[in-house]
Image 1 (cartoon, rainbow, N blue to C red):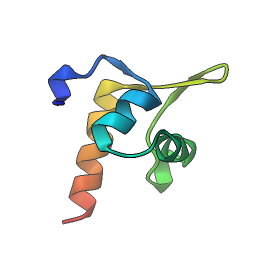
Image 2: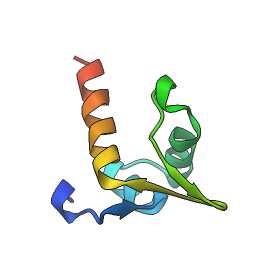
Image 3: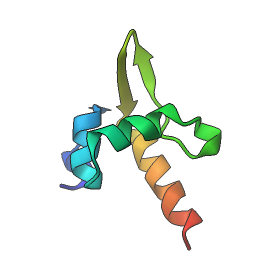
Image 4: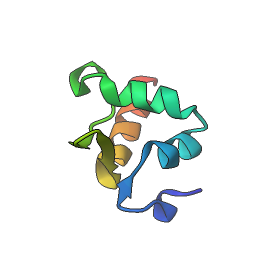
Length: 67
């Protein structure tokens, strides 16, 4: 799966598949504050979603931190 294949709004299932992580781990990353390295999210009631561009920026930031 490539970035272009992702929808504009991402669910934990989609991100888990893309990152090859468990859905539980993705939810944990969404629950961490952005300042501490968590995935930025939108929360509507109990539903958590991530905007594709925020997800891409988060990944790029993670990659930059590991170099």
